[in-house]
Image (cartoon, rainbow, N blue to C red):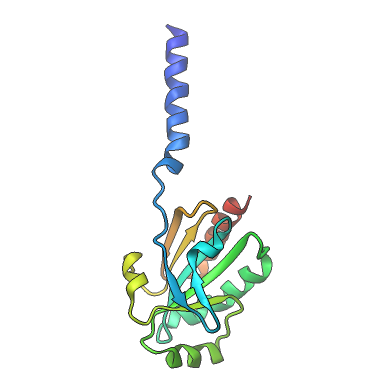
Amino acid sequence: MLNQKFIISISCLLSLFYSGSIYAQKAPYFELPGDSEIIKLSDYTGKVIYLDFWASWCIPCQKSFPWMNKMHAKYDSKKFVIIAINLDTTKADAHKFLNKVPANFTVAYDTDGEVASKYKLKVMPSSYLIDTTGALVYSHKGYRESDVISIEDKIQKHLN
């Protein structure tokens, strides 16, 4: 009787442990223009990806860029990458923003909002953490200084 309860308990624990990876949703694939090349999600397979959607008119986006620059500098680019997807209808609007608030990470342009639709974007900025297998493991809406420690903890967890 005791052995049977033990086996059932272990089975339940194992199923909970592995269920996260079994049911993890794959990040929607994209190919978007960057400033000098096409940015393909598949080029970053094996890396932890912080995917951020932003626009030039978004005030919280202006606040998030210095933090993303800090994360980009802090973590090894062989294991971690930030891709910021701009949703302005023209690159010119994005470049005005980037002249004031530079990005030291990869920037892509989704002028028709097709990729934003795949990610079911509702709030600006919105960010997603994608693990090394390409699974979406975390999403965050908006940008608040009070959230950055928690977000960085999640990045570190997936890098280790």
